[in-house]
Length: 109
Image 1 (cartoon, rainbow, N blue to C red):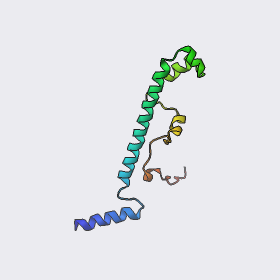
Image 2 (cartoon, rainbow, N blue to C red):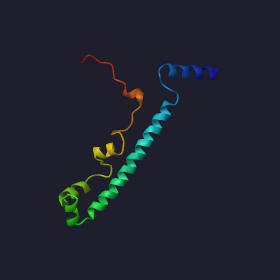
Image 3 (cartoon, one colour):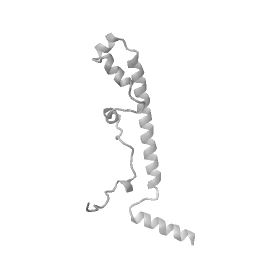
Image 4 (tube, rainbow, N blue to C red):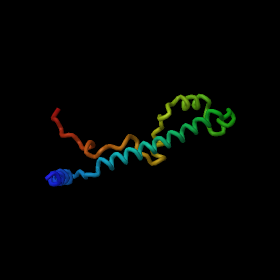
């Protein structure tokens, strides 16, 4: 009997367009996003470290000022510019569950 109930529940999920594996797929997608974001943050931390140690002559060569470097160094570890997300092919913002992304019905307000 319990098996029949499980089949009914699975059938209801499938008929609503919700796969039994969707929660797992969402979790995997979110984990991949977080790993890419962490790798990008590590890369930026290394670049910021390198910038910190450049002398004024090298900064002029690459067209940056000491004030621009200080501003960049003041950013947080996970403060990643939007252009870097696009460059790495990472969508900005965490992936969302499809069910929660659906538009809510208009309340008429």
